Length: 449
Ligand code: PA5
Image 1 (tube, helix red, strand yellow):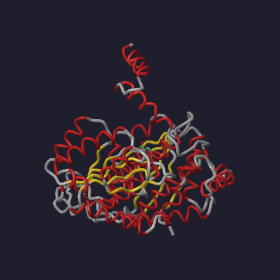
Image 2 (image 1 turned 135 degrees about the vertical axis):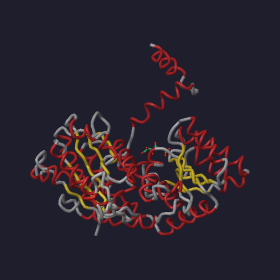
Image 3 (image 1 turned 120 degrees about the vertical axis):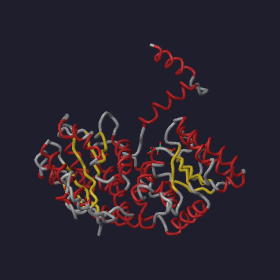
Image 4 (image 1 turned 60 degrees about the vertical axis):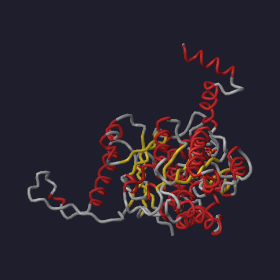
C-alpha cells in the first residue's frame, strides 16, 4: 500500500467529474503505451522499471563507494546540471537538518554543488573554501559533454590534484556517466576514476533512481534502499491499474490537462516546508522539459509557503486567472515544538500557547487553499505522511509516471529536450568555438544593433 494521497475535490466546478471520466479510455491507452514501451520516446523508458530492476548488489556498490568518499571528506562536491544534480539536491535537502552546514554534530560530509552555473565568483569562492577542507568530487554528466559541469570539473580537477597529488586525488573522484561514450567516460577511464554507468534508456531528469541521484544521496548519509523501496511500492501500484479512481498518477495527469484546457496554463507547486524548495526545482525541470514543446505545455512554477505568501501570494490570489495550484502537503513534522505562554502577551499570540507549530502551519495551508480556491485558483492536494526516504521514493516515481502520461495526453514526446540546444549553439558561437565562425559574425552583428 502506498502512503501518497491525492485530492482533486477543489478542482470540481472548473472541471467536472464527467469530464474526468470521459478521459478513461484515452488515458488507459497512454498507460498501456507507457508500461509496454510503445509510446513516443519509447527508447527512453528505462526509468519505468528502475525501482524494481535495480538490484541490491548495485545499491550495495553505490553505498560502498559513498562510504569510501565520505570517510575522508568534510565536503562532497557534486558536479552536474539539470537532471544530473536536481534529484540528488531535492532529496538531500528534503531529508537534511536545515542547519546541517553550520552544525557541529554533522557526522556525514556536507554535499555542495558545482557545474550548475557559470558564475566566476561562485567557482572562485568554492575553490577558496576547498583550500581548507578535505573533499571528494562526484562528477555527473550523462552526455559527458555539457559545458557547465565540464568547466567546473576542469577547475576542480586541477585543484584537487594540486591539493592531494594526482594519485590520491584520483581516489577522491567518482564519475557517473554513460557506460561507453562521451568525454567524461574517456577521462574517467584514462584517470582510472571509480565510475558508475547511467543506462542508455534513462534520460537526465528521470535518472534520480540511478547512481546519478543515489550516489550523492548515500554520500550525504541517507538510506537509498528505503528510497528505492518507496519507489517500488509506487511502481507496483501505478502499473497495476489504469483506472482513474485507482491510480493517483492517472488522476493527476488527467486533471491537470483538463485544467490546462480550461485556460489554466500555469501550475504552481506549493509547499509549506522549506525542506521541499529543491524538490519543487526538480519537479519544475521534470515537467518543464518534458511538456514545454511544440508551442504547448503547462508552465510549471513553484512557491515556498508561507514565505512566498508575502510575495507571490498576492499574484496567486488576485492576478491573471491562468493558474492552478498543486499543494505538496506533509502531514507530520519530525519534531515537536509548542508555542510558549508569554505573561505580557504583547504579540497577542497567547491563544496559541501550548499548541504545536505544525498545527499553525496546517491551518495556514488549509486557509490558503480555500482563499485561493475562492480566488478561482483550483487546487490539487498531494499528501505524504512525513518527509522520509520511503515517502520521497514514492513521490519521485509518482511524479515521473504522471509526467510521462501527461506528456502523452498533450501529444508530445516527454523524453526529449530539443529546445535546450538553442542557447548552447549561440554561446559557443559567441565564445568563438572553432566551427561556429559564421554564426559568431551574425550574432555579434545582432548584439550591436
Ligand atoms: O533532463 C535532461 O536530460 C537534462 O536536463 C540533462 O540532465 C542536463 O542537460 C545535463 O546533461 P548531462 O548529464 O548530459 O550533462
